[in-house]
Length: 72
Image (tube, rainbow, N blue to C red; front, side):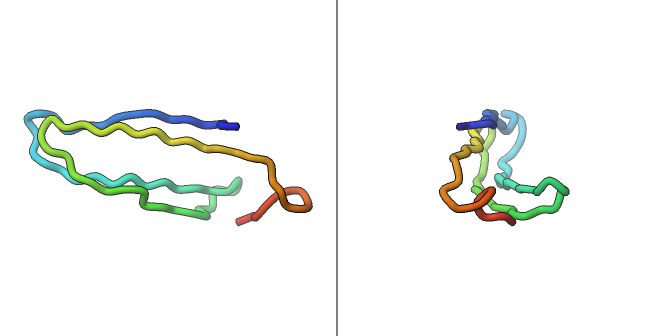
């Protein structure tokens, strides 16, 4: 099951100079407390370059005992 899928792109205008970018994903629990933060990738964009991305959240049934799997 994939309850969330986000696709997007970003780019550097042709009149702009080179720039660097980073992709960071933060996960928060139901109280808004950050439980994970991951740097997924870094890179550079030259003039008129573009990057695209897809973010998926995939869910599978828990194979452990009890109400759920690992809790953070």
